[in-house]
Length: 254
Image (cartoon, one colour):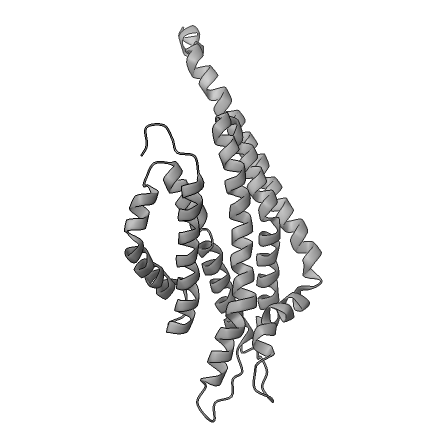
């Protein structure tokens, strides 16, 4: 009979399995909470889906030539475009709660000094991402759409498809939201010892060039929108360097 030997497992293996299962269960519960939060916000916003779309499309509608309007070229676009935008808004609004759940999952494994740094970094990341989207909506969109509508050739009516417009603005929201995370990324690299303020300062020209390359990749293929993204990225990089200079230096670093 081999029942005794088969049932007998090393105690270390059993103790290792228990925490893993507990972590997986906790992770599942937190993911369910995040999905539920997004769903609840989405259900609360869905009644106002058309109003939300009107708000997001206002920068273009205000400057469209007289006699033109936005159109829907696909059968399902009048429903799907506001639906997708409302889902995006629900995720954006729920982001503090989502990051709070992620923080609650990883915080027990962090040291006290890491927790002190993580909270302001996470908080500033959220605010900067919102700031990037607000900058895109209030500053970039009016300038960008004014340029596009006036650049239309004679005889061409500017009548943008609602789904194409949504895809365009969501791409810019993400691009500017991520671009505004540059100060956080800069500070994290300095804190982690990956680089130093002096090295970043010496590579400033390469960073500026990189900002324009990233602007070219993340924005529509025109120099106007690329510049509107590249210049704030460079200024945010400078802000990250300034904040890094104010941080207390670790012992043993120059």
